Length: 260
Ligand SMILES: *[C@@H]1O[C@H](CO)[C@@H](O)[C@H](O)[C@H]1NC(C)=O
Ligand SMILES: *[C@@H]1O[C@H](CO)[C@@H](O)[C@H](O)[C@H]1NC(C)=O
Ligand SMILES: *[C@@H]1O[C@H](CO)[C@@H](O)[C@H](O)[C@H]1NC(C)=O
Image (cartoon, rainbow, N blue to C red; front, side):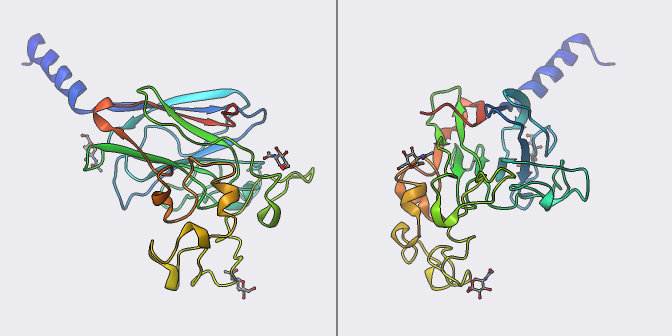
């Protein structure tokens, strides 16, 4: 028989060993978007207790628990979706995933261009790592904030309209809902040996400097300096952010954040 006192101890034990963070995903855009979430299950098995894809009307938010050892997780949003027929990666103008509205847990990453928010919590060095990645291009402005005073990662600017060579895809009104990365756009003509992709002979930090990545300035220096823009952007010092895991930060991801 379990006494009341030992039952309480069991509950306390459970409460202290399975701590979780609260994540909030807020759509501050004046239009509907379809957020999506993916965990690289090769890196860790802990997954948030929430669906991997949902519809978010303008100015709506959801909150859910995320295990404090969530590893290699990402959240992004999809634009201009219609899941009525043949739901899958092509159901949205960008960011679509295998699965349709709810992304497949094993293969449901987003179709570029898509701005990503990425996390690995409570890593071996005692830090949370997080970033806003434009490595797969851009499709919405976004910001990662937190409740413990750690740095903001963001790309608060609409990169579509001024994107020149990499602009698109376009919605039915002709408005650009994305800006492709130079790698994904195949600007160099050989994605397997490209300074834009850090591939082939350009596959190390030393051989793939930001100066060799076409349009790096447009993405990073001119508009979104606090984003992770290409494969080896860590050296910029404002791409990958950390927060001590001991602070147990709760994170908010805002799409279309107010201009900073
Ligand atoms: C995450 O933490 C939970 C609870 O402590 C544990 O059961 C699980 O094995 C951990 N997962 C990973 C991938 O470390
Ligand atoms: C686009 O470029 C124009 C001209 O340089 C500038 O005035 C405008 O603010 C830019 N728009 C965005 C969204 O960056
Ligand atoms: C990249 O561009 C080159 C040159 O136009 C073309 O031959 C090649 O098929 C393209 N590769 C991809 C993956 O689109």
